Amino acid sequence: MEQQDLSKVGMELKRLRIEHSYTQEQIANDLGCTVSFISNIENNRAKLNLRVLLYYAKLCNVTLDSILNAGEYTGDADTDEKKRSEARDAELLNIVHQFSVEEQDKMIKILKFIKDM
Image (cartoon, rainbow, N blue to C red; front, side, top):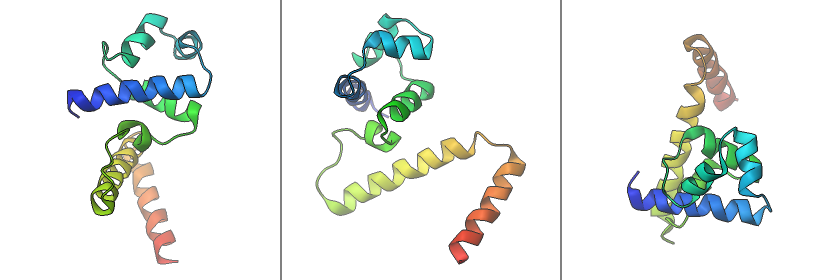
């Protein structure tokens, strides 16, 4: 992800926090970090991490796709769908990698079964 993209993500996190009436202090307390760290993330002075992104997504009931691609959709249906698809793929991979190999094998079997229904 390019630096420009990261600045949009920080701004989107700030927008979501304000839209949902949360303070930086509330976010910091929940994440176990400092208010200045949250401020730095929202103002692009600190690197984002997956834990923070997942927290904001869950807190604000949005997808990682909507956070990571804030302001990036072009209005061209094919291009935008490709970006959404890539974001979904990345989100799925992040989730799947949290499971053991055995659990991943079970998930594959379940998904194939569902697909063939």
